[in-house]
Image (tube, rainbow over all chains, first blue to last red; front, side, top):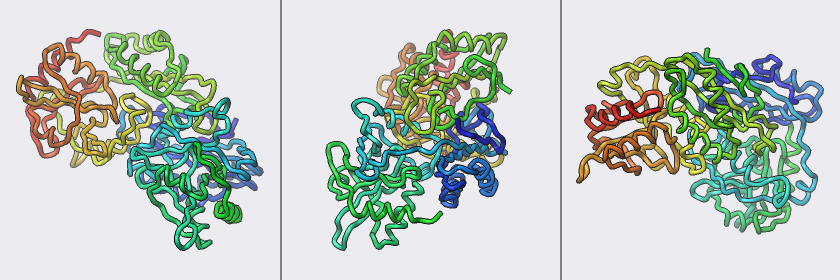
Length: 280
Length: 280
């Protein structure tokens, strides 16, 4: 069982009148915990703040969240902290309550151990049938309406025929590749002046991951040019390197996408190392 | 406070690990209660069943839901019953738990009294800026991912400048009108062989309302031809009659849409009466 704080109090249950439960009216963050504290705190708080602004939910004080996070994380060397923020309780009906009292739920769970093979040789990835619908009002932020990801992730099982599949890619209604069910995507292509790192534009759908942000940052610092652009599956098939990333897994090279095979390339290796040596 | 049964037990709180709270991974139904029981039970159960099939959630036994509903509704002459069904508790991650144990939440709240003017003279409606994104995998069913409705409903307040606005219309990304934030939409146009009733096609987005279904049924029985089709705002502006419907409000004639004015017409009146005299 994870250890949970609801509005600062140890608890495991929330009102069924909470709009997080009624409508998915809220946001979340998943943080990696090491050496007794959550990593990349400022970046996660910045994204949560942007999400709250977009949904017009009152953002909890980051200092309050920090003190609650530290209470949960004390002494933990390796764990996962999830923060859920919702618009709080409301009566029936979509109209946001006035005033609304934001609900915050912090829960700590065990670290996830991924096979070292995933990092050394890369992962196998499938293309999901479930599409991501586009809505600029919801794109980029990490909100609680996650049925599309749930349906996409339900397309393959961890046992049997698909047991080696580690992640699924999701396309939008225009056949553009957007992201994995739980990760962002990058590809490396050869340009005139060297390697170019490309990642899908997330203006219409998708989640702007913290690790995606950091990959773009360390690539820039290493002099690798980065493009946020439109990418189809054929663009991926033609790439030299392909990798996925999120906060918990870091960078996973892709060794297989459907029937297409890739090797773990130098740019992926370089960025993985640069990411690991990032402070905070 | 509504009276609530969670998995058959009186309770007001649900596990924060419930996937309804974590991902909006579930469905709901809102039913009108009169004379001690919920109305249109079979139709609501049919839609809930279709939603469960689509999301691959194990549908609770309708007989069990019925007995719990009857326990809440006993002696109530006028109330609202909300049924929420979710995929139940899960660990972190989008993959549906195996096995999953469906959560069911039944809550009873007071009936909503709408102004009689709404029925006699019609309501004023605005056009929302927030769009409905399209995804056939989620279209038609009444799932818990309702952020688009929340954002649309937050565009106007019940006090001040917009106080007379009763509902907002939502368009998809192709400028097709789909529905209201909490209602379905019909328009009446003059055809060669008489009046034609038109309502937006809900293949890509929108909720297939029970009252929408019944309006189509009673119109058919009255010999009025019905089309589920693509409708833009200009199609609505050119219509003779316009009305909204849902389970709780029945039929609301529209008297104003933005700057366009309508009168309460004969087809709207006829269908309102036919709907009221439907059994069950």
